[in-house]
Length: 429
Length: 161
Image (cartoon, rainbow over all chains, first blue to last red; front, side):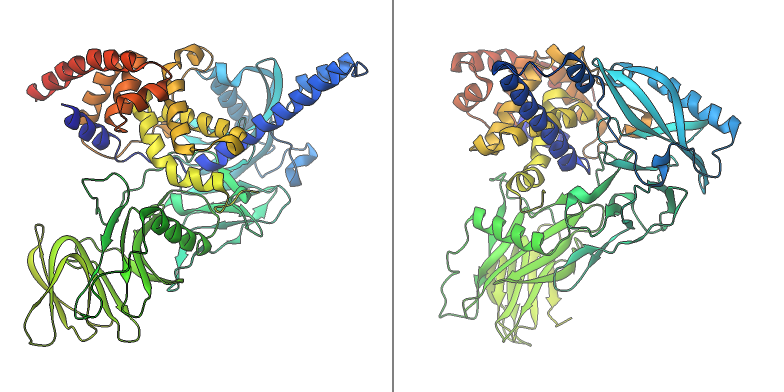
């Protein structure tokens, strides 16, 4: 019963991954609590030491206003912007949509609306009209001013997102299909990147490009081949994930995992797959350099230094093919998936990273790394029995799962439950 | 300024997938699970310099807050913001997940936390007691009450297929 329960709980949660901005939200909320705590401490101390000069009015004003977002940039002049700013009919529909939203089931979270919604931008987009509305609400006895982002819905304007809790949310998808993105111009250099760019040396970076701002907002359509979870809006120069601009109506992305599902059933931690030396009788076995934590840290450190700071979903290494070559090079091979991009294989040879390309689950021998200086090939298929041969010579046993075979090896025989017996030719691709 | 080299960020990036799964099993709702995890991570951010074992701390905090969640439920109802926020969770057949979640829902909050910690996280009785801040005897009794109920519900569900 208990193992069945464990398996069912594992299966029931197998596709659940954190939202794109969990780290950003956790840090933001953590910092807010930290500031509140520090402020509370300061105020308490002030009271204790008798600093009663702090007037009642000051205390009241501190408590009474807590703006979630201070408007800056072109939209901060208090005037309505955009080519639909003067459209009374659309303005009325937008205000109605926001008021309806505020009075919906979320009222306890959004509190009591104070005053009327104020449209700060309204404009046409390829997906239909869109708007930004500033509204003050009273939440837990405090006034908060925030932005409501309005897009298109089946029955007219529809609130797509707000930034009441997260002021860094300053972009939203106008359409329900999430193909038309609108971004606020807050006066800083703000750009968009649609996809990750992968390079042979293991670098994975976003290529940012300018946004076409007009009247305080930029509207862009996602290229047809772009998945929305690879899109990043960031303030430039983009040095930290904190410069990511939140896209309000994208949360909880759960991309399909495309990596190799190499899981050791006996361990829930990382799966360790040492490669065995074959054809190098002088070296009996791999030097015992790696333990799990070291492998993980080395792989993570290599990935981090080769990847930009845009946060988002990433499946980090869960298995490692590893070992030491006859010349003492330490080799680690692992996979990583960013957003809904295909999982990729990486090799770390000593301190040098290599991008081995997209993981091919259908490949009977998905891991093949040709080492320099004639040290051979690292090959792996978890769960398979491996053999190799040179030209038409005899087959030599290479053990299970992973092996370092001689540089002159021309083919590897893979016997696995999934593929049966398959012969794979080795060639320097 | 945070970065992937920041210990807190590294912890969140590496541990949050597993912690979210734990949170989901504890509360049974994707949105509520992420809210709960975010809340715990924010608390950890404040206390970070004093936390020795972040993962253990996070699990304990998740279990504790999930067990006591009813206290704050009336302050912040957990309903989807819009249908746009209803992200389908990929994974096994929905019926499998629904059956399990329905069975877990039938337990008390404390029984549920006990079962999830013991059989999802593979905690020992002693570890579970420490995480839940209760006695070993309580963990045993909660487990003894929960397992027959789960067995009945899950067995019935399988026989109905």
